[in-house]
Length: 111
Image 1 (cartoon, rainbow, N blue to C red):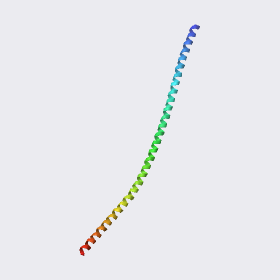
Image 2 (image 1 turned 90 degrees about the vertical axis):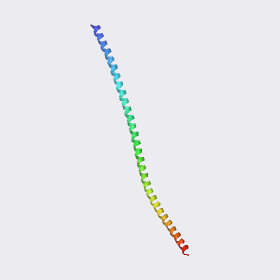
Image 3 (image 1 turned 45 degrees about the vertical axis):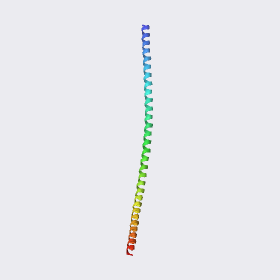
Image 4 (image 1 turned 180 degrees about the vertical axis):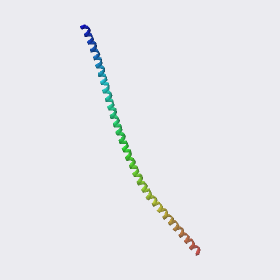
């Protein structure tokens, strides 16, 4: 009877040792999974941060380009006005030259 009880206790002890090893392996697996998950979360947070910084830089570039465009539009308006003014002056001078030439021809004919 004692031998049977001893054998039963040894079998139970062996089962408990196996169960302990399985539980230890499970804890190790869960710990590794949590660590991996945490590393993934940190990588995702870093990537998200990079994306946000890139987006902020692009928004800044867009604002800069819009401001530059506004300056160019204003500058183009001024230059366009100057061109029109020069064209008017050129036409005036051309007409004046034509009138002078016409008067010269008329005076020569009258002589």
